[in-house]
Image (tube, rainbow, N blue to C red; front, side, top):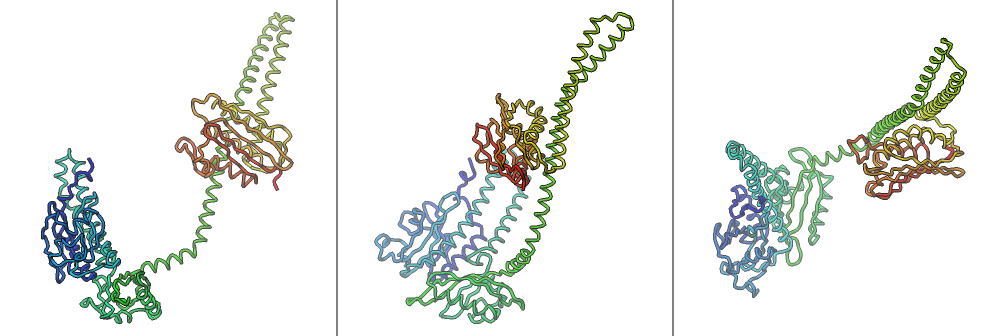
Length: 598
């Protein structure tokens, strides 16, 4: 059972520091909305308790006062519906004319539910008035913001308790250890609570404007109330919280005054919109950048503004960061060019390394192919030596016969022919390898026959393909002349073969085939490499040519093979490459290459 299921919210308590903060919220709400009562109610079935009550004139509600549930209280409906409730005048509303709060003289009500994180109801936050009050949408938004602050505190209380439950569950079998660590745990809780309080002091919107200063401008009286934090930001005398509006103007930078006043005037004229502006402000002899936000929250019957509230923030560091960023961006192009050059150099080195690895694989293949003809030649020559030695002994002992001499001559001739064939085979393999090595190491452009270049690299790849039980079908006819880079074409084929060996087939696949074909027009060669393997997932296909992309990480694959193939085909051979693949039906790589490079 999780901690969310076992926590009984009825047992959770609100710390004195949090309650003190909530008390400040209620006092501020009562003042801003201009009502006698602002309450936080807590449900304690079968009763509901006045958990906190604003310290405002005309408030009939006492803290810790209890009232029975089921009597038609405003707050009961808010908690039952879990929705805001607005009652402008209960006396004229048949649903509320019998409400118990009427006896206390409270005929108007606006309230919101307060809910724990586990969806249990804590109670309500509400305001009541002894006169008819429709409560503007601005006041509803203000109450919602304060509700968010209270519910955030409830979440912190709840999370602290949840963590305690989780710790207890995890350490149920370590009771002795729990006792030893109890002091440390309590110290950690105190540090967490201190950090939470510090965070709330910085970011609390209602009292300190989310870490900033709150101001309240009474236009008819031409007075501005500044919170403690606001006084600190503006560098005003700390002994006074109320100032004249004109006092603020004298500290604004002369270049910013006109724009600031224009923004305020626009905010006063706008029916509901908020406004914001930035300006420089002289604080203790230095210019600081401030961000001021505000909105009109009260107007008279002829729509003239009566009260405006807002916040101010010190944005000097942000402004300096913008200047630093602008200076940084001025050199960005130069740094990007340097990084690009370094990246290009690294990619070139990686390509060289991969090319050498490919050449190494070809060397291994050629060496394996040479074993057979060289071995045959060595075995035949040693046998021929034995025959000659035997013939010499017969001649020395005068036992040599014409028939024995004829047999030797016939067998010797056959042996010499066998040696010659195997030596020729080895010579051809060495010649092929020499050409591949020259092409791979120098990458020189030259005229060549595509059939011969493909034949050379296929001969080198033969052992690797046979070990992988892959049948190679070669359909490249002689006569396709090209003037290009044969070494790069050979590397493409070698990389594709390595890709097939590594990725194309499953262990259970019996019929494994690779087909290499070519056709030519007057100006272009189409080279097609395809296998009958497992194919490539459509989700992977857009990424197969990206450097270092591999589905076999840690299994000998570096994710560069197909990337190098793509770069060679397009950047070096000035051609194109197209992948065609359906899962379960193999993969086909189609190249279109110019026969003669420009």
